[in-house]
Length: 206
Image (cartoon, rainbow, N blue to C red; front, side, top):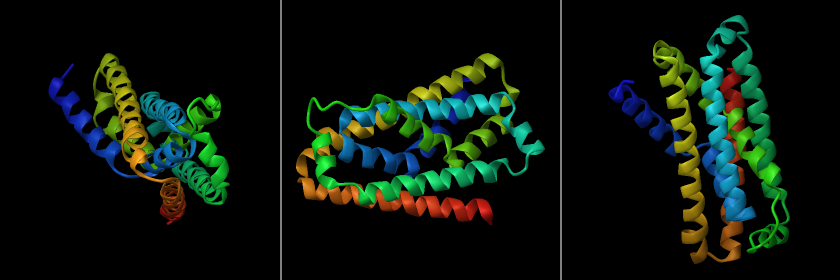
C-alpha cells in the first residue's frame, strides 16, 4: 500500500467532505430540528453513502456510465428533486413540533434518520462524480486491498467529520442560541438545500 497515495487521497477527501454542500446543510438542519442522536445517526448514513459510492466505482460504475450515458442525469435529477423536497419540508415544518424533538430522552426514528443521511449522499451527484473520477483515474490501478482500505477510510472519516459537526452544533453553538435563532438557522439550511437542489438540476440538464 502506497502511504503517499493514501495520504494524497485522504487530503482530497478532507477538502471535499468539509466543503459546504447537501450533506453539510442536512446535518445542520437535522441537528437543530431533531437533536444530537438523530444527527449522529444521519452522519453514519452519510458515511455509508460514501462507502457505497466507492463500491459502485470499484465494481464498474464508470463502465456503466459508458454504456448508459444518461446515468449521471438520472441520478442527478433524482438527487435534485430529493434535496428540494427536504428543503421545502423543512421550511413548512411546524417549529413547535421540531422544538419538542430536541428534548433529551425524546424517542427518534432511527431508520428515518439513517436513510435520510444515506439518501442525501447517494443522490449527491457531486459526490458521485468525485468518487467515480477518483477511482477510475487513480484507485482502480491499485490492489483490491488498497481499494477496500481507502473505501473504509472514506466511510469512517466522513462519518467522523459529520458526527463532530453534530457535536459542535448541539453542545457548542446550540447552547448559546435561543429557540427562535435555532429555527431561523434550520430554515436557512432548508433554503440552502433547495438552492443546491435547483443548481444540481440545472447542472445535470445543461
